[in-house]
Amino acid sequence: MKGQIGVIGAGTMGAGIAQVAAQAGHKVVLTDTNSEQLLKAEKQINSSLDKLVEKGKFTEAFAKEVKANLSYSIHLYEHQDATLVIEAIIENLAVKYELFKQLEQIVAPNCVLASNTSSLSIASIGACLQNPSRFLGIHFFNPATLMPLVEVIPGVATEIQVTNFVEELITNWNKTVVVCKDTPGFIVNRVARPFYGEALRIYEEGIADFATIDWAMTQIGGFKMGPFTLMDYIGNDINYTVTETVFAAFYFDPRFKPSFTQKRHMEAGFLGRKSGRGFYDYSENAPTSKATENTALGQSIFERIIVLLINEAVDAVFMQVASPQAVDLAMTKGVNYPKGLLVWADELGPAWVLEKLENLFVEYGEDRYRPNPLLRKVVREGSKFIS
Ligand SMILES: NC(=O)c1ccc[n+]([C@@H]2O[C@H](COP(=O)([O-])OP(=O)(O)OC[C@H]3O[C@@H](n4cnc5c(N)ncnc54)[C@H](O)[C@@H]3O)[C@@H](O)[C@H]2O)c1
Image (tube, rainbow, N blue to C red; front, side):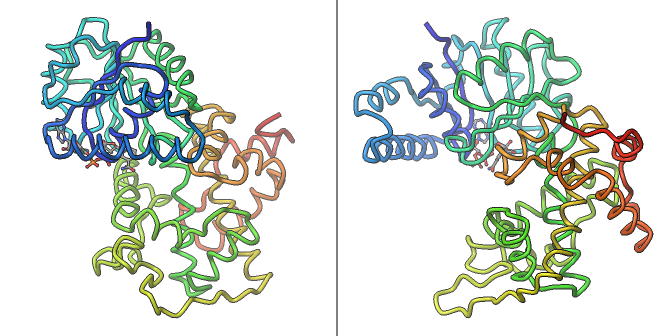
């Protein structure tokens, strides 16, 4: 018999995580302080399961079983029999503290506790617990039912058995698990920053417009979406906030400096698709933005962004955030990159990547472009990142 799973917070992430666990055969209790939100989550999960039946992905019997695995409650004490409780409430440390303090009084002493936080440190949340050794981060991506990647983040106090247990459990939920260090942005939200930041910088320097940069990254780079289309999809408010949080958490390292352009779009309410206008206009008769399809220009845009992305991936490995394989897996499964950045570096040639970065560093004199020492070492040794 599989252990009972608790999920707290029935919003965007909590509802998805509850559905994933229920589909994996667990009894799941989803709680929220807001009963309307619980009803909404139940409706959303049921309709998602019905659609999967319509599409022929699930049998009716299986969908029924999944629905029966789920229960919804406003009472925290319903988590008393859980083997694992995942918190997915509002991103506020004080509120999370209050919740975990109460929860610790309810659950069994060996129940594993986790947070789905995107930006708070695991150490800081765990510090409110009497026993932080059973606490860690389990970071799903949105939508949790579809995105295969889950970052598992042990804090400094987490026991290794707890990490191993969670790694195995979530792998059995049909997810790709990467274990990473408790550092700002974990893997994906850290390594992906230059995809947005350097694209914005190229625009700000007047090198190319949004459509041309998007064209370069999709048609030359092979990315599924260009940076501006993706920022509009994510929402400029959310994307800007992640950048600002990572920038502050890295003690204002210029590599992560946020962009005025994005901030102004956010301030103007140009949030992206959800507000009808972001970098692009989504209103009905809006003129389509045309890219300047100049191959030499496109190639230079792609090269500038890809070397910065690679430098960031190398830094995550250099600083022991995760293994090269885990970093590549995270970027392909978490944000659908066409290739892992370290495999990409090996293909382009580490020496070529280093030369490009050095040229940018000399040209701009900014720390943002400083090549990572591990990249220098790999070039010096004539080795590769992924053998
Ligand atoms: N949205 C994303 O793309 C995303 C991705 C990965 C991780 N996260 C993280 O997941 C968490 C939840 O984000 P979300 O986007 O699902 O938020 P959301 O606003 O959609 O949902 C939060 C839910 O928590 C409930 N809630 C608030 N305080 C509560 C409390 N004390 N007890 C019980 N329920 C409470 C709210 O009623 C709401 O239903 C955050 O920590 C966020 O950083 C979000």
